[in-house]
Structure formats: structure tokens, C-alpha cells
Image (cartoon, rainbow, N blue to C red; front, side, top):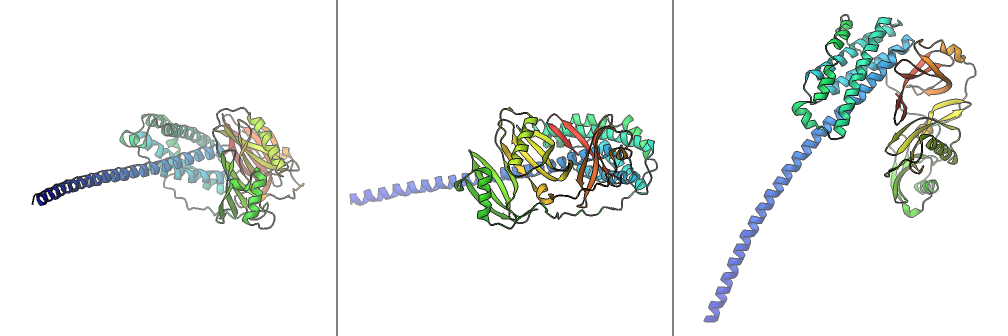
Length: 462
């Protein structure tokens, strides 16, 4: 009997323990649910905040891009010498200013300065449209109209610089979109407000006769299917493409992994990931002919030991070793310890800009970090260069007298209609800007104007 009582007591104690264990487990489960809900809520709020930040970032950097284009096209419009090219440039001002205004309106900033900036872009859009209609009719711009464009360009430079300053502060984390949403940016407001009052008053007086204009959208689509004249040879399979990679980079099979064939880009290509000296490179080999379409890698570079001039020569020698003869450097840009250099083909002392190869070179040891040859593969061929051309002196007569000429050369340039034109290329400058002006070497027509941008990190064109 005593034995039964003892067993019953043990069973009762175990039941209590299980009951307590059950209660503890329920509490733990509830806590887990509460914590999970808290984490889920936090993640959702964080995802919403990140999405909002991303939307603002996208709109802002589109704004910066279009504002830079407005400033560039306004600069070009002040030195064009023909009504036809003026119409094209002013139409570009109109479209870029419209787009800049759209993205500016999406900014989470509410102040008078922003309103003035929108007003300015609206006026630039209307005025450039009006002048483009005039030039399309064959009329040249008057001195007063050119002066108005110069004034607008000055204000556009100020607005562009302000936006770039704001971009730097956002990139550095000095300010956030959350702060801008709450209180706006005092520096931004001050800079843009400085463009109001007298500055805007001077511009506004020129718009009395140009209100209520509507653009009818007279743009045509550009051709986007190049002939790929440099893409020579027969189709190859993936194994043959891998052999090209091995030879080009000097690696073995074990260092190469395939990412398959991509057929939805500009050029059908086999894609590979390659390990070279503890560095990962991505490389694409064209299906047709087995050409290098693209190669890129990144590594940290702590010290620059090579000058841009030395890097240019390293790039030329590299291209020659790989079978790309007669390539001449044009423009370059330094970035994070490396330099990206554009090389264009030279034929009979004529620069052929469509046949372009870009190289990325490390400035610590001269390693070729990247290569992009789509332009060359799309366009390269031997041209029949006309000898029936006007002289450089005859071409100079077509230039705007405001430009001070510094150099001249023959060049073949691409057009937006997928054609090519032989031109006299003139490098020149005005008081504030440097330009490349292209005069058709056969007809004397002004074909294009590029603005040269000299930065501490290199020389670019826009």
C-alpha cells in the first residue's frame, strides 16, 4: 500500500512539472510571437523607408542628370553658327528642361527657392522652344536672343552646381531625405533664392511675347540596330569561348566558371567568371568570332604610382599586343585609383570615333582591370575616305567668330541616324568654355558641337 502511495505521489509531481513546463512553453511561444511581430513590423517600416529613399534618390539623380544636359545644351546654343544646328540644340534644351522640371517637382523640399527653380526651368523650356521654331524656319538668332541664352546659361550653371553640392552632401550622409522632407535644405534654399529677385527679374522681361506655347513633338526615333561590321568570323561554342578566355587572361580551366550565353543584349556573348591572382574578373566573349566584348574587375588600390600619360602608353601597348592596331587615345577619367581611357581607331590620319575601345587601368601597377569594345565590334571596318573635301581654312569660315581656334584635325563621327560623316574637327574656346566643333568636310555644314569638360580627374566631352 505504501508503494502505491509513493508511485501516485511521483506521478502527481511529474504532472505538476509537466503543467509548469506547458505554461512556460506557452509563455515562450507568446514572447516569440510578439518578438516576431515586432521584427516583422520593423522590417516592413524599414522596407518602406528604404523604398521611399530609393524613389527620392532615383528622382534626384535624374534631376541632376537632366540639369547638366540643360546647362550643356544652353552653352552649345550660344555658339552655334547655323540656324539648322541651332534648331536641334534648342530643341534639346526644351526637352531636357521639361524633364528636369518633372523630376524637380518630385523632390521632398518645400520652399520658395524650389519654386523659383521650377519657374526658371519652365521659362527656359518655353524660350528655347520659341527660338527653335524660329531657327527651324531658317532664321538666325539675334544678338539680343544670344545674350538671353547666355544669361540663362549662367543661371543654369548656378543651379547645376547647387544640385551637385546637395548630391555630395547626400552621398556623404551629411543630410538625408528624411531631414529634407521635414525642414528642407537651408543651403539649397539660399543658393536657389539668390537666383530670384534681380536675376529672375532680368530674365522674365524677355518672356512677354512667349507665353502659352505648346510643343508638337517633332522628334523621330533613332536607329538602334547597328550592322556590327567589326564582328567578324564564324559562330563558336562555349568551349571555344573558354579557350579564348584562357588565352586572353592566361588562366587554366579550374579558374573559369560559366554564366551561360546571353542573347538579349547588343551582341550575343558567352559570360564567364574568372579567378586571377585572388581577383575576380567577369568577361564576355562574342558568339560570333570569339571577340572580347567586355571584361571588368575591381580591387582596392591604395597608392597611385603611375601617371595618366604612362597609363595611356600601357593601354596602347596592350591593345597592340591583342591585335588592335592604330588605336589612339582621346579622353580619360580617373576614378578610385584607376583610369578609364577611350581609344579610337586611326585610319590615314583620320580619327574614327565610332571604332571605340575603353580600357580601365590600375594606377598602382598598370594592370588592365577592364575592357569594353562594343563600339569597335559594332562599327570597325576600313573606310573609303573621300579626298574631295574642303580645306581646313574653308571650314573655319563656317565657325562662329566667337570661338578661338586652338587645333584642327580630320575625324569621322557617328550620327543619330546610324550613319557616319567625315568632318573637320576644331578644338576651340570662348571666354568660359571649351568646345569641339565638327564641320562637314564635304559640304561645309556644321554637324555637331561637343563641350569639353576639364576636371581634376580627366577630360570628358558632353
